[in-house]
Amino acid sequence: MNKDPLDVFNRLAGDLPVDDAPDYPGTRRPKNRDKVLDNSQHEWLNDLPSHEYLVHGNKKRFYTIGAVALALQRKPVTIRSWESKGWLPPATFRTPAPRKEQIPGKEIRGRRLYSEAQVVFLREMAMAFEINDPNNADWKGFKKAIADNYPNY
Image (tube, rainbow, N blue to C red):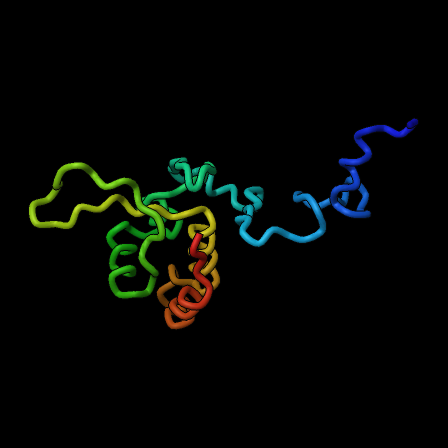
C-alpha cells in the first residue's frame, strides 16, 4: 500500500503519460463533444460584440448578425441578403422571440445568432476566396465551400 491513491486517476487515459493524456477519460474520443476553438489564432474575435447563452446546460458564446458583418467587413443587410438567396444557411440559433409583435404583419422571431465556429469559418472562407477584393473574388468557390462545409454548431 505504498502507492499514491491518485495514481489510479493518472491511468484513466490508458497508458499515456499524464502530459500526453487527452482531455477526456478512457481511450475513445467522445462522439458528441463540441470542437473547441483555439482562440489564440482568432484574437480578432475578442473585438466583436458577443453574448453568452446556455445551450444544453453549457455556456456558449454567440455573435449577432452585426458582429458577423463586422468580421466579414460587410453590412448586416448584406448577410441577410446572402441568407435569403441561399448562399448562407439560415441561422442555427436565435434569441427567444419577443412577447409582442414588433412590426405589424411580420412573423415574430428572435435575432439570428452565430456560434464562434460559424463566424471563424465564414471569415476564413471570405479571406480564402477574397470576397472583399472585387477583382479577384471567387464567388462560386465561396458559395460551394459554404454549402459543403458550413458548421452546424
